[in-house]
Image (cartoon, rainbow, N blue to C red; front, top):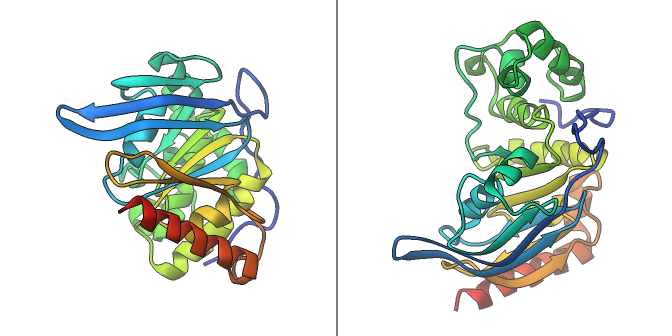
Length: 271
């Protein structure tokens, strides 16, 4: 499988501020499901166009955090502002959320799955396909436009899901473990591919992952979280995010040292 496109991804632009991301501000965030506290006192700021990773153990509230930012849930404490708007409706209007599973509709072709966002806004099927078609070559999907999800590899399905997320045209992308279901080789290829896609765009991105190496490679900054209830234990900047080839980046002594520092911080937070 191809590891990534040769040229930068030409992303759709947002309707309100072409080519720009939107700042995400989280202040004193707390959330509980009944008596179960999942997030406690979390603060975070992602500047417009910044890629921020969130890493922590299972159950520490990472996925819940993305749902809160997206406006799918309302926090039980604290505040979340996206582009200055604290309302759930305002956050939902500015955020595109890609969950862990690709959730492609099995009865639709790849290009129709990718074009679901414009279709949901009232565009015709022809117009939605026209919006998606130019990006299929850049996303390494040329020739698979008419394929059903069952005919695609796991990596291709994730590319279609990511393209669908981009075509939502939102300034903030929320990516929840986008490669968790893939084997190690395909995951490494997809990380390098996503690095190209993120470097070419100006969206603000929050990336949730269990993989410290993935976060340090793809993100400008990485926030490390404690076990439930999730709270920040450390924040690290990547020495050289999103460079290629990935194999050289992750073997660089500075990267190896930072990965060790991140793992040590996670271990401290678990005590």
